[in-house]
Length: 352
Image (cartoon, rainbow, N blue to C red; front, top):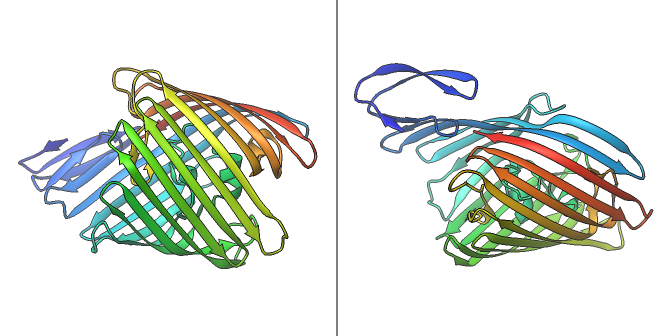
C-alpha cells in the first residue's frame, strides 16, 4: 500500500485488467488481492475483486455417466461505502450463466456493529456451510444436505449485528420462490433468522455454536450447527429439518466433516463463518473427510433428491493466498430406488 504526496497518474494491473487511477495524499491504493482505493480519513472506500474456478469432473451413477471440463464460477465483484452507506454487486460469468447477478444490495451501518440493515439480493442467513464462501469451504462442493435445505440467495431485507467477536445474529424477510424456479415470478414470503455464539474464540482454538430457522408460506425449516478449531484440526457438523405444507412427514439430514492442515496453519474464523486458509511458508496442504446421512440433493454424483448417504474425501493445496488446487471423491447411495453414484472432481481456483 502506498501514500502519495503529489497528484499522479498510474496504471494498475489486476489479473489481466488495466486500471488508470489518479491519487493524492487523500487516498490509499492497494493492488494486493484486487484493486482497492480508500480515503485516508476512512470516509469512503472501493474495492474490485473476483474469482475464477475451473473444474474437471467425471460422474458415474446408475442413471448417468458424464465427463465435463467447465468454468464452475467466474465472478467479478465491486463493493464499497461512502460514510454509513455501503453496497456490493457481484456478477457471475460462469458456464451457462451469461452475466447473472449473484449479489446486489445496499446496507446502512450508522447504528454501529450491533445493527446493520441490508436490502437487496444476498444470501439468506441459514446454515454454516451455505454462508461460508465457496472460495473457503473445505470440500470442493457443498453437502447434499445444504443443497436441499440451504435457502441461498434471494431478495429481501435483514437486520444483523455482532457483539464483540463471539456473538452474531441476523433476521430478515425474504422472497421465497415456489419450487426450484428461483427466477419465477410466483413466490411467497419467508422469515429467516440465525444466531451464533463462540464461547471459545482465540485464533488457534474455536468453539462455534449456531441455530437458524425459516418460517415460510410453503415450508418451515430448522437448523443446528457446531464447529471447532484446535490448532491445525477443524471439524463442523449440521442438522437440518423441514416441514412442508403439502407433505405429511418431516425430512431431516445430518453431516459431519473433519479436516487437518498438515503444514501447521489454522482455519480462520470470523463473524460466525470460516475464512480462507493462508499459507505461512510456501504451500499449505489440507485433507478433509465428510459423511452425511438423510434427505438431500445428491445431484453432484448423478442422483436425485432423496433419502440417502454420502461419503466424501478431499485434498487441498494452497500455493499462496490467492490460488487453490483441490481434488475430491464422493460416493453416495439413495434409499427409495437403491441407486448408487460417485464423482471425482479436480478444481483450480484463483481469487483476487
